[in-house]
Length: 345
Image 1 (cartoon, rainbow, N blue to C red):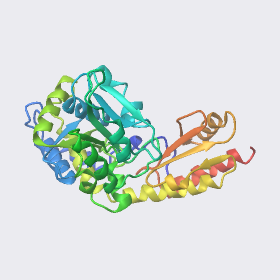
Image 2: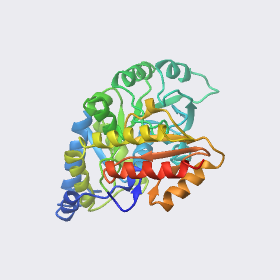
Image 3: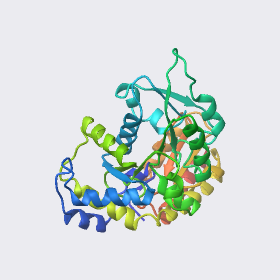
Image 4: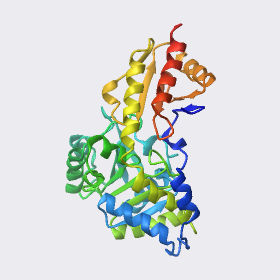
């Protein structure tokens, strides 16, 4: 049990002792010159895990998504994505501001575009409208509560996009959560997409960084875009070393986070005034709703007073994320706090 139960995000995880040791002992070089051996090992491992030709270490998932967009589109094009996607909601309109591309958000039921939606959204040749340059998917889906899209669903969407000569990018910030949840290798989820990003700084518990993977030509373009964005890093092997530990030691334990999220969701479902769709609690995210005016703000404040941190994402909605630094006892403590607060409602 920890002094504070922090359920705001899996980005709050602290590096493991093995990560700190690897960081201290990392062999390094200048990565802009492509001379950092630890970064090269991480990029190669990322490419192998995703079944791609090459990888690129970047500072964040947002940077990874942006270099992927920049490397596969040109100004004046349009990208198709889900209305609730991270790229559309949480990346400061970078695709438009920096890439000069328009986003075309589409409302979906689970956060995943269907083949028919993509087929309908791809633009025909017409001088008046922006040509479709990219289709973007997200798996697991953050704003839909960590829901998982199966590899077959991704393949079906990719087939429609590729038939129209449109590439597909997968925002796989938590793709290892999806793989563990469905008990399938990550490359099953990435085979049919042209590029993929994933974070080592979320559930995998590394302190910093994400990987972008794709063909060698794509990664060469992405490396140039990374430099343009100020993301060229020098002796960054001290960070990549933690990423190696993350991929080698931290993947299978994600199942513990999923079990804790399920326990949390089931407890919330029994709490008066709180509402959660348990069918959507598939990985390590629990989104629930407070059926009381102003109740979400009250719940966040009262939980904080009990050393339980939760995150409000809407007027009546709260997101909780389980991770390595939250154990079963912490979950029970959070549920006890929620029960105490809601008992008087």
